[in-house]
Image 1 (cartoon, rainbow, N blue to C red):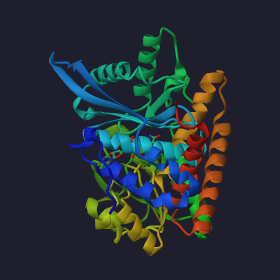
Image 2: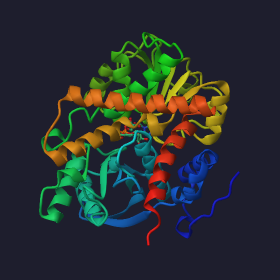
Image 3: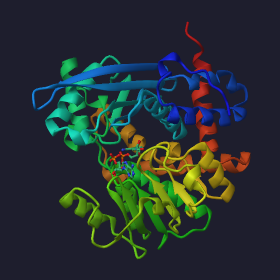
Image 4: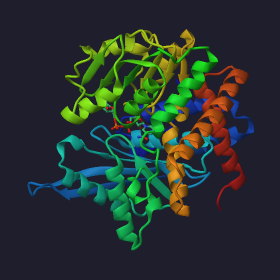
Length: 426
Ligand code: NAD
């Protein structure tokens, strides 16, 4: 166990995800050579902004929500990373998510640093008008940090294209000009990019398919189980299904459905559109959420929240390949248990980089006011994912390390090279 100096502002916080990130950095440090001199820079976010967001609720009362924007690192370019609305958001979680963005952006070689934002709120308890007010107030409060060449937010858990439209509009109103490039994941009508909606899931599929190829696993009929059926989970499930794989279980916050003969994720999506939940989907049985992890399957795609695969369930997981759609789903202890068993884990910082890659395309298109075809976008996305996967797979073989450590070696080397070249100011 390593001990880390804990900054005073974290004293009462839950250290979970940030501690996991620090452990990952400790694991990669021996492989950084001379660049290890700069490694402390990765253990501290560059900037943290904590904001109070008061809004008037529909019933006339006032409610306060705590929001964050963390810029973890900007050595390689502006901050980039999503905004999460969830009742369990904490500063340390946003810090970890911002740090994973630094690693992810460098892993696929995008010209960005890492950032992330969040508001501690259960959006299910607010009306659409209240969510809009909260989004606009939060955007105004973090206005001093964000901007198309400073820090560019995007959707994450419980935020979507509409949230991005409000953020873009609010920032633009504050600036007195329309600035589409301040956020990505926008609706197409406001400078959004074709292919962005499914981009993270498409990247998850490409990464999973690359891994399968290397262990001679055919995608035809390969079983897939997915935790989370939001932006990432449902796109991943649909794209695996469309390539001949068989989705046999889906878990979300409302329950777990299972059918060994396969579930059509397109039908599940239609069912959710009609009823608001996966519960009651007729072509599958409901199983206990705990049993999800023990199912016989080739692929497991966690696409919900952090710390889902832990020492408690890792030993029971039968999947050959885990493709981390979610950020931080696996603890370091679970990582060790699974890699000892020979399970291939394609880490979040590589597997779910498709989203930020197409966000990068969106940002470039906004700057040039010239928009690409969906086919062009998907091809470029695939190329970036396959090249990154190949480079990292080779590092893993060469250094005899896991894919996670190989991704961290690749990414941290890029970030610290930039850090070393820039030098310390003043
Ligand atoms: P989302 O809000 O669209 O969907 C989240 C899904 O998780 C929902 O289906 C929800 O029911 C499910 N879920 C929530 N709590 C759960 C629980 N306790 N048990 C089981 N399921 C639960 O969010 P998203 O954008 O799909 O993000 C999912 C994950 O992917 C997050 O870790 C996010 O950081 C990561 N990610 C998202 C993107 C993106 O482009 N949206 C990109 C990279 C990584």
